[in-house]
Image 1 (cartoon, helix red, strand yellow):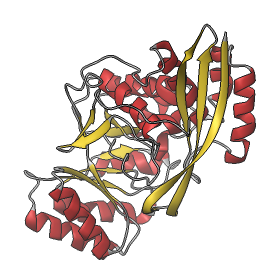
Image 2 (tube, one colour; image 1 turned 30 degrees about the horizontal axis):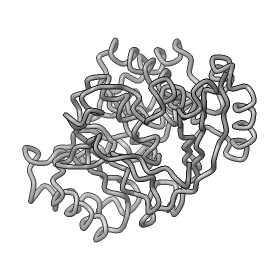
Image 3 (cartoon, one colour; image 1 turned 45 degrees about the horizontal axis):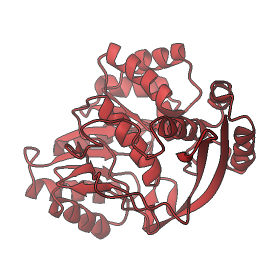
Length: 350
């Protein structure tokens, strides 16, 4: 017999995070706790993580929905099916908490070389949006920290300044030394996108995420066909897609990559389905966190390792918060590691 409860938690950014949807100072999260009454010492924990303005979840309905989840926690398969359309973040939390409980409630969802501390996950450094000088300083800091794959947000400041920043970077670091990924978060207008991609391509860009806003499949398909920079779909995957619709979308657009954010697309089963479709179409992929706390980040990292990935992942967001939950996760040498000698410090929060 399972019992469940939930706890709200407001994450506080160390410094405002600039996104295409404005500055974020805080981010709401909820933790779902599941206990097996036969072994009450074991507690599985999952994180409900949403990004206002991006997540499909109706934030005002999350706590009411979590109450219903706790009442019906012994019907998990039915719960997941009911929630997948409107509350993908709760599905992610439910999957994570059940995996955690199944493996002893110690936040080790999979026993592998990562959780044993024997290997790390290569990750990209992330440079948040800001003015020219702020982004230049952040880029320099990431390089000084040893990152050789860096993702830079574009589309927030004057485009000429963004080009100037990329020119500055390439004067000091060739593509042999530093790989650049860009993320436009849908900021380019369809009529300007191709021209901007051509200008950006002068700087040996690895890929660009979501150059135009989602739900413009014909334009995106044309861009993917003609763009001098490989295109990765991100926000395009955030929606209520069955398996057939996943196939149709990727066959129609034919991107070079897709970006998987389990919190936003409905958990690990949904992410697995996207991967299966993408690999059949020879589309590359990598996973990235969606501003989760260390609870969610840890789950995504461990799931990712199970896929035997080779590309650097987007899992370096654990240091964003002033009040993140202390965990065994560490960033060393531009890799995310799990240090089994460190313990989770969940009290008094959880």
